Image (cartoon, rainbow, N blue to C red; front, side, top):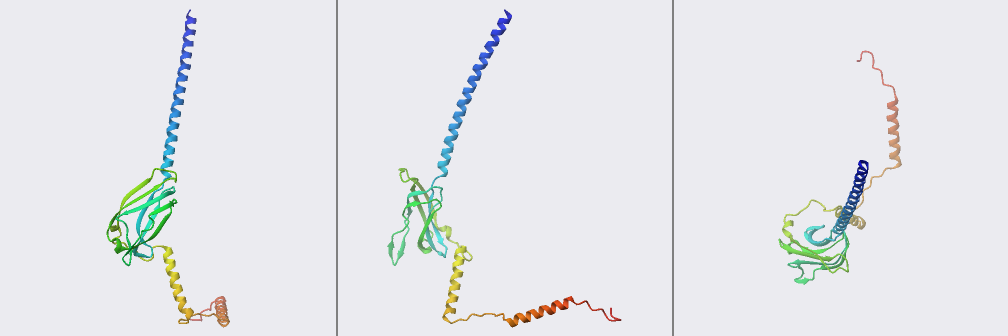
Length: 231
């Protein structure tokens, strides 16, 4: 009787252990599936967040003159922006002889990642110390219906005491140097200036050779012994 009881008890324990093992395995499988789903969802969200366009419009000093400004529209994001619309409040005005000229870069079909377009906007006096409300809008894909937008303030007071020493970029410095060379060469070509050239003839080379031979011969001679009575 005792052995039968112990055998039955051991069989019950084994059955309970197998049952609990199945329960634990099922729970671990469900938890692993849940965490895999969360990870995939977060990975997709992060990928969509990083692959987004970001369009900004600014007024920046012209590389050639700090007294003149360019309108620059740039896509600083990691994806292309389509159907880009840019607006300023109050609107930018460019005047030529008192006549209003329509502002360019109001609408762009596409702006690639890292791409920027610029155009001349006017002298600093045109903008003074105004503050503009800038609004940009775009879509991520040509078939999208939801538009992305960005709105911010752009204060021209940021450039009130703006200045720089020398050329702003190496390209501008190279262009200035090339322009100076062209101007100097124009006077030479017209005959108003003459080139100065130092020539090195065969006679000069012969004199240089003899001088070197004399120095070599003098260096190879033994030093002179001092005369008697001299220290």
